[in-house]
Length: 152
Image 1 (cartoon, rainbow, N blue to C red):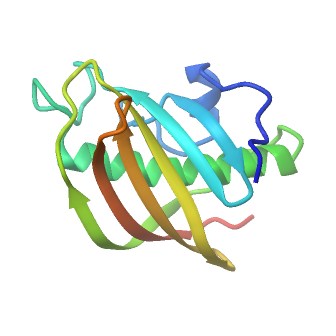
Image 2: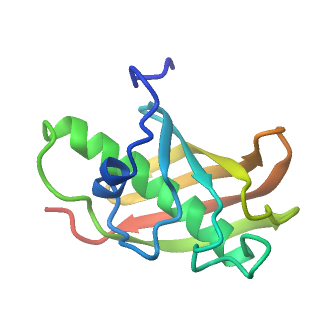
Image 3: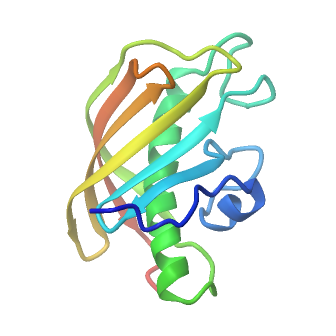
């Protein structure tokens, strides 16, 4: 599928409106690609991020980045479907399978997280996720099931 974005979305305030997480727990800062079955988010790892250990983004930060990238897909899809109105839906991780952390990105690193939807049934999504640095190195990957808990 082609990218449905006219341009990359790098306005952090707008990105924050698309996800239910709030500061200081926001682990994405860009929407780079969107179609019905895929999203690519971006994050510049900064020293003030609560999930860094002083020199690197942590394993928990990578997992949360993956989960928030899923939320970003749902949030942007909802934004389009509602004509820009409404708030993002709250959800949670139902399961994580095959999670692999190959390396932790240093502070200052730009990462891109690609989420591909394998299946969606009602409020449950099964996705495959890869996190890469800008050199194309695979930092982490997993499969997740996420569940929306406020369907209104």
